[in-house]
Length: 144
Image 1: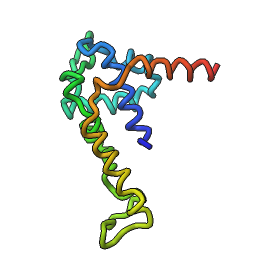
Image 2: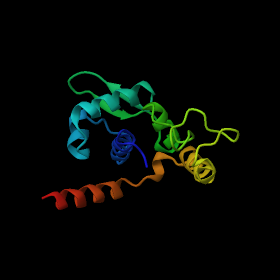
Image 3: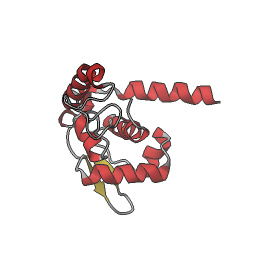
Image 4: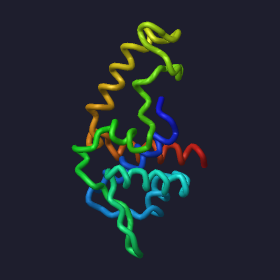
């Protein structure tokens, strides 16, 4: 449902929310989330520019959440990485509205309202880091 970029970004922030006041190095986030390092650093930069994260430079630098997990909504996260297209046409048509509907317009109308509402009301604090870790461990053990 979400792009790989969005999934990675959610994983980064869910991991970091396990200790909302800690400073995390990009290397540690990479090791814990298994997100490709260059891709990870690009996402961290976008999140810092959007002021979701605070970046600290230098030898002991890293990233930390810039605000409480109660104040970070999923829609903000998607906006920060330019991935918030959930309100757009399901088929990617540039003109899709009541007068020019795509073939999925009517079927997607209600799910789109529910999805947009979920993104606007779900806070980072509602996403359980322990569930993400369990998923990673299960995935890792299957790959062995």
